[in-house]
Image (cartoon, rainbow, N blue to C red; front, side, top):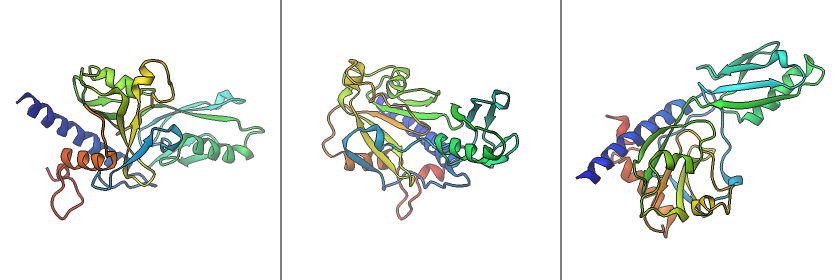
Length: 245
């Protein structure tokens, strides 16, 4: 009975995460479909260069610094229309850009206004700040995502691994550039032992961290089944039932 209650609460929390992801991601540039059977899994071990970069979303807080003109520094929240306002260049559409892409765009716009536009863009707070932790952790469920939170941080905030949790193959499910959920296998045992630092992945809004009990043989099939089991699909529709409740 306890497992049934825990799973029911997990489904509701995961639905909240994914519903938030659907709404927040629907900005001027991008419109993601709900999580459905298109989920896949990278069969090779996690590689940070293969994960999609974070893209700015509505309600994110940005710190824009002008290295040679600090009087222009700004702390900004991305408006519902996906724009920010800055001196001299007025409104800039930034939702859907990476921080590096926004930096390049701002430096381009300021070339006519500043002698040397040397600008940095830092994401200081997420607008869509939820992730979901599931599997062999003590308190699975939804978490508020703080800037700089890693997979290990999220697991620790969920009570840590259970005694049966497999640290060598923790699954990170994240949307790719097209909005399709893709699983990535991460060896957090090496990270915990200090043997590898890159593997302690920085989380993004709406990521799912799953700690399995045993090694997953066919990761691609597993990700599809996990998405289907947690969010059942109404026959004939590619829309999870939580959107109809």
